[in-house]
Image (spheres, rainbow, N blue to C red):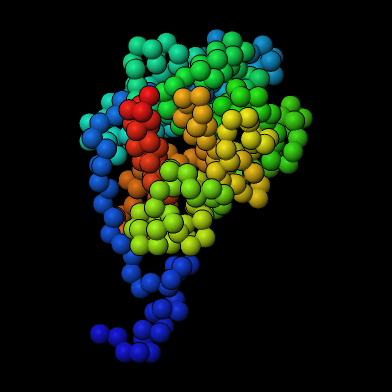
Length: 306
């Protein structure tokens, strides 16, 4: 047992920013979703045939090393997405395809949801036909979509938005050494009424962290130097930050359900698997995992209502 002075000292030294609780919860991950078929889309470049003439010109002499890096990143990104599905769904089914195959794969696979990975290169380095075909697909699909980081930006341009660097430049004006948002950052929720944030306004809810329930904040992994400039028509802004105003948006019209996040919510189980314990405080990307799970639940509800 601690005496009063010892209790005071322990409380003063606690690292928790909210409530100064002298404990943290043990949090095993329960698979609360019975089943889901998820199409995972690799939105990075794979081969030289995926590249534009501009990319071939500017990457002359370095094409193979550039593509090797893109393939490495795509493997990590798609695996992280798959791990979310596997660890959140009792009977998970996933299929991973390239960006250029999204329309045909959706027709054949008939997924409950589509999750699109982040990207690395600017989209004018992509084969223009691939970008156009993806845009046509996104503008008409009724399958729920979750678009992450670069795919958030791809959804933006598919619906008429422009892309800028974080310091408000045209992308071609500054290809390298861009201002970036990197590592864990806070973003501010601007519309807690959206169902993907279910439970935030319930002070007794044990789903969200105290900083989320008290200040409408998410702590998420960032790694980008490009942003969607504004909010495209038909979408609603859900979260923002000081460097990047459009951190999260949703389209809930015309029979569509498209969630877009600038941050990497899919890292949740990458971090979770590295934790030495299952206590909540070391789980850096916990907020991303909750958003991913809520998206899958909303996707299944959306399909029933169609």
